[in-house]
Image (cartoon, rainbow, N blue to C red; front, side, top):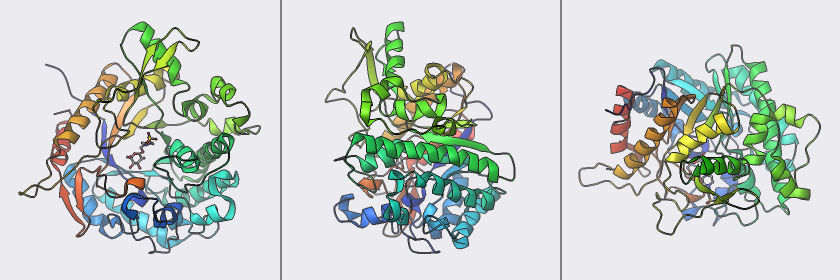
Length: 457
Ligand code: GBH
């Protein structure tokens, strides 16, 4: 029989982020983030939805954590909102905001659920956008590091798993790119590709300074990681020439050459820099050393991938378009490609030659057209299909000896899906936004059984 068992110490979890679930946008001393401003601007978010109330997790966190305990997760990844901790972005710390996260962490610890905190999941203080254009300005990295020091010096006695930043390409490249669709906050058009790459360079610096700040402020030894959604190249056939093609393509696919490469190898991809020419970001002396910090793990957010084949051209590979009828989940970009979870892990270990680096799947999941049936259930067998196939490929990576240590399903609850508002549901728990009632979906029961038996069922 095929063995679908996971290692005894495998970490099963779920993930969420602050702006997507908390609500209480004006409570507890919080001030606006760029996402509050962006979603309040008509036409920016589908149906003009905003995160002002979201899942009201700010008030309902106890019930939510109780439900997590019922699910049986031993790990939970959430994010901390900068604008709760330092509402003006820099300067005075709002202790009431800190207290909210103390309550969350204490409650998780009571249930034996290990907290993992992402220090930045896109909701940067609006004040810094107004003051100096947030990620357009190098000062943002220093202000981020001060915010990190404020958090870790206050919460470091209760939590030891820190993730600096979630998905740099999203809030930089999709936040500032001309005509990006759908856009991300602040949704500002900058004039050149160089300015876009400059925003992600500043975010890389923030990550590096953030790592240093965490280690300096933590009262105990802790784990520090980055969460990235690097682009995954999948060989169309698993034969030597196509695997080699996928490896070559990995270095410059998506934003890989200017994000995951500098973080893990200390260098931007030379091919990317050459292609960018005068659009390459300004890199000051010492920046790459700051960015290339030792990490305890890499967080890998994985939803889809790209097929590659070997080609007789100057690159040695070709990126294959998806055919029109290719199977997709409920998002235009979400092509079903479970092999990408395996290849992503393998590319870090093998292609970037970092077999030493433990990998954690920090997000994996999909939206579905979830509906309550007459029995009041949500039978999301499409989500189970998606998750099961991905876990099988994750297990393949483990069986082949790659260092995959954990899996956080995105997401615990249906939530505010950025520019898609509430239309897209990613949860394994259904949220009735009118009543804030939580209804576990069929996938919740399936995942609970996987966790309980430590295998894919
Ligand atoms: C993650 O990003 C986020 O971390 C999380 O907050 C979010 O809720 C979750 O995924 C689900 O979306 O339209 O072709 O330009 C996902 C990564 C990167 C996927 C940008 C969509 C745009 C593709 N996203 N990508 S396209």
